[in-house]
Length: 156
Image 1 (tube, helix red, strand yellow):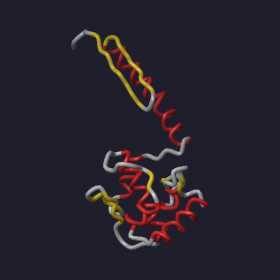
Image 2 (cartoon, rainbow, N blue to C red):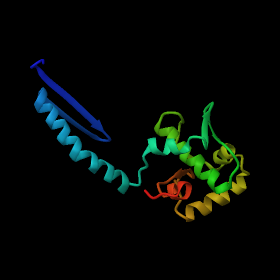
Image 3 (cartoon, rainbow, N blue to C red):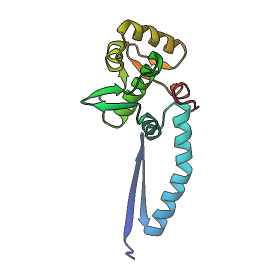
Image 4 (cartoon, one colour):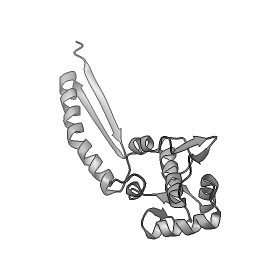
């Protein structure tokens, strides 16, 4: 085995950590760092209400698709569920680089879901009051981690 120096750089969120030394030393340091840091990173994500994008993407399979830069809701369902799926798709799509933004206007949501815009606005208001969507100062609506229970019967 090569006895030269090894340098490993780990980046996640706003954190950057570098390990340098011989192979064994770096291997032990990286393993120790990840075993201590990863649970903390996951705990912070949960405290901040962040959603596991890969897990959510898997759950959205067969319910939504991205076609030609648009979100397509598959199948018939009630308006609130369509809206939540649309916003979940925007969230995942943005995180995966498939979609340009993670928050949408009521008009965009209506267009993607096929719902009347007035119906969309009324349901968004109800969903916001229930804490299932967030509304930005710009009038854009977004998915929240509390939406997971409503959509998939689970807690985050």
